[in-house]
Image 1: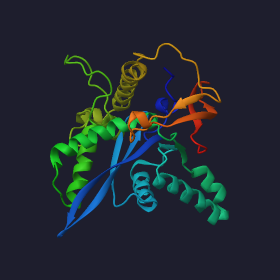
Image 2 (image 1 turned 180 degrees about the horizontal axis):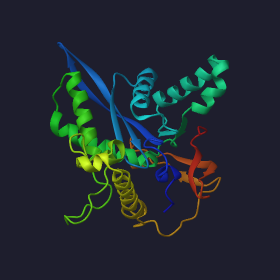
Image 3 (image 1 turned 30 degrees about the vertical axis):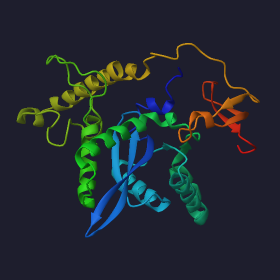
Length: 295
């Protein structure tokens, strides 16, 4: 099993510094007497597991860029975005790069503020397993509530935001039943500084609010939080329950069979490895395969 990528361990960076993005749906909404389709989009912080959900009117580049602008306005600009090779994501990357070409005066400033897009290899959804698992939770929650009925758009949007709050309230790590143990860390605690939107993290008396001990109290809370985060959460990210024995890496000219979930097993294509792409640790997890003259 490989080590965790660097994007999963940016504990000194703000939430959504490294963000995974994907779309899901469609869902049917009703506008008057007609029905239309809407899609959901998920932004997931790879370090803190915070989730941000939004609604797309279509699966084109413009809808993705509008959702990205809303996300940046509310959560801040991510340093990097990891996603699959969807046409809307690749088109969004081109649009952001073309802006720097259209404005030569701002080209240098934009290069410093640009977002680095990192695309997963084709036919490799497991590269985005972190946010794919959250999409499964979102779909399960919406399936229970919506079933097969069409709802107004504002109802669907409200439900997405409520599901987002539920996912961000999940504890990061093991939650003990002992009342003497500290409360587990949740993504909402990282985003808002409290467990949820209604309960504050701590209650101070008037003397504490006006006295000099409030600063000392805040430092104790911060230290207590980081002890929980580094001791209880980070070690659970890399539980090696399988893949403990290394296997030979792929090599050029090796014949492989490409798994295609849309085809039966008897029709899976066979190809030849033309290029191997090593990971940061030197292992081969990505390769270019020639299938009947098409790579």
